[in-house]
Amino acid sequence: MKLSIVKTKEGVSYLYPFILVTSLFFLWGFAHSILDVLNKHFQEVLVISKTKSALIQAVVYGGYFLMALPAGMFIKRYGYRAGIILGLLLYGLGAFLFIPGSFLMSFYFFLFSLFIIGCGLTCLETASNPYVTVLGEPENAASRLNLAQSFNGLGWIFGPLIGGLILFSDDSQASDIIYPYLIIGCSVIVIALCFICIPLPEVKEESFSAIIEKKLHRYPHFVWGVVVLFLYVAAQTGINSFFINYVTEAAPEISNRTASLLLSFGGMGLFMAGRFAGSYLMRKVKATFLLGINGIGAILMMLIVLTQLKWISITALFLCFLFESIMFPTIFALSLKGLGYHTKKASSILIMSIVGGAIAPIMMGMLGEESMAIGFIIPLLCFIAIFIYAIRFSKLYR
Image (cartoon, rainbow, N blue to C red):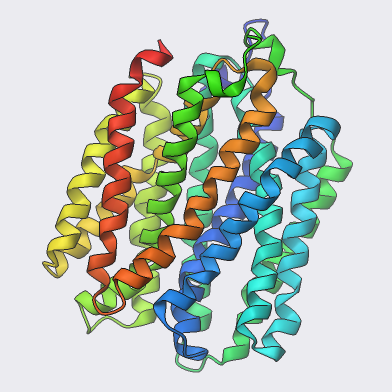
């Protein structure tokens, strides 16, 4: 990593705060990606439909929608560090609720636990994403956020890996669901204690960009950024949620456990690699140009997925993870550019748009109840909108 992307023009270095906050990106990557294993696990253990299992994503991302503005107000009053600590404590509480949940084996109790986790993740993302964008020069914000989000990709690898090995093993039991959440719950509480003991600098956004006294709805790059971020999260969550379903239907010889490992090392491995590559490339080319190129790639991959060409389509599904990797941090950083004093409030609204992840899986589950491939029409439409956004609004970032 070039240290210049976490330095100001005055030479102030934010390297250590950047490293500490970046560790959080792993945590919510794990929390989101293990949902994709839970989706298939609950379909079989609790004997529920694809549409009903999609409620797993709906409650987590619904938590984003309901908690985003309160989290933003809390962070605006008490600062980024307090927001991070609150998020970690809620995350840990939700994880520990899986202990009684493993005995009750009630789908709705699990949904409640996941909702608490979703509220915690909302606080973490509302604080961490904008905090990373202001830890250095504004022109490096997209590159800096992509670098931090690369470690989020590492969490996306471990989620289906650990979840798949535990829940889809030959001797697994329904109650084994307690183990991954017990591990992550303990880890989260330890990290929360570290943040309580280690103070972080409270960066003032005003020093990085001029305050323009306008309402947020008068910034078109922000308004459309909210819409497109909603669509991106819808596409990403839908693809992840039904990856195992698609692969096992396209190639029946593949077991659930093998499919979860393919998701971990194949899909999420490409996802993480794409974010590292994107962080480097954005120091060479414009972020909007790279977003447009990746949009084209994702559209082509979804078209191949819809053709149901067995291993060719499965390969295209893998490659889609590479193309979608830079989309979230790039859209997020570009949407916040030049907002100055409004950054914390704008971040809350952007985090609310993550509710797209609550809607797309349900729609895909309904469309793909008989054939999962049909459901991938939803991500295709989302990627088309993202490509149009990258092309149409590139002038706004000059």
